[in-house]
Amino acid sequence: MQTLTHGGDWMGYREQFGRDALDFSANVSPLGLPKGVADAITAALPQADRYPDPLCRTLRAALSEAEGLPADQILCGNGAADLIFRLALAVKPRRALVTAPTFAEYATALETVGCTVERFALNEANDFAVTEEFLDAIVPGVEIVFLCQPNNPTGQLASPALVRRAAARCGACGAVLAVDECFLDFLPDGDRWTAKPLLHEDQNLIIFKAFTKLYGMAGVRLGYALSADTALLDAMQYTGQPWAVSSLAQAAGLAALDGMTLNSPADAVGEIVNFSTNCINSQTFINYLNTRAVYVSGGSACDKGEPSHTLLAMGCADLTVRTALRVSFCADNTAEDVDALLAGLRDGLQELQHI
Image (cartoon, rainbow, N blue to C red):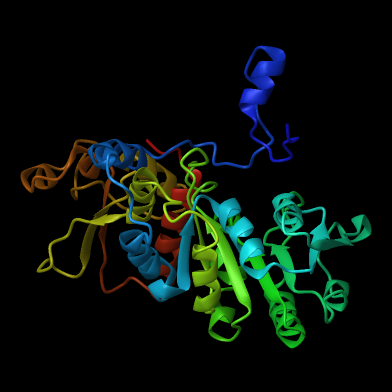
């Protein structure tokens, strides 16, 4: 039997030692599966007797809005690993470049098609950072370059300028640059580091992302690829079975993307905004924001910790009511105040325990 190199083999540990391990081998959100995602999977069970949509049309439409890219530049798969293997099968490269150390599945996927994998050794003296010397290893004959951003397992980030030069170097050599951003959404400033802006410039770029890590959905298996090279995505689509993403996984992805709910009606006054996070108790979030000198209320202006009678009267779901926040603006608020609010909401959504 094949030796498993990926972390998270809890069953193998149980079989060997007769007990469960405290598992630090897989980097998945410790918050577990969000309740809204679990509820969506349960709600989708009655449709489990049907074949899933092989093109993931509804999910890709939601991802298109979330990522700001056309839906035809998005391909969904059975986790990012599935898409990495599909890329190898679609391109069938004879020679590829990866860093070392890095995520082992790149080399595993490449070797299944007989590819020679060259490893660029990261230097401990540079704290295992990807440096300019890596660009010198991208030479004619290399057909795929993998770059993990941030790198697994070092956690190091390559600068956006270096990634841009790597994309240009790959373009000049006729190579595909595959950037793995599965861990990038853990960063509070992930938008600063993403290679997505390069998709408008480089047809040879493909980006991998996954719901696995941030949403604690490793067992659901859902990832996606972004590329302006729609012909490449089509080729990847046809390298495997058409129903790679189950209907339950598609429902889970939609729920994860659903995010906040705006409760304020369309004709409400613009100075007051009421919304629900759908994952964090109102008072928990209020207390967190207070520590950052950002002050909001629950679902009502003077809620005193009680559920908003207004939201209840509107027929809002229990989760919507329990996770509601109310923000009031005035003429004295500044752009800096708004930025502080947004930063607090962003960081709180990443740091607080989901309910």
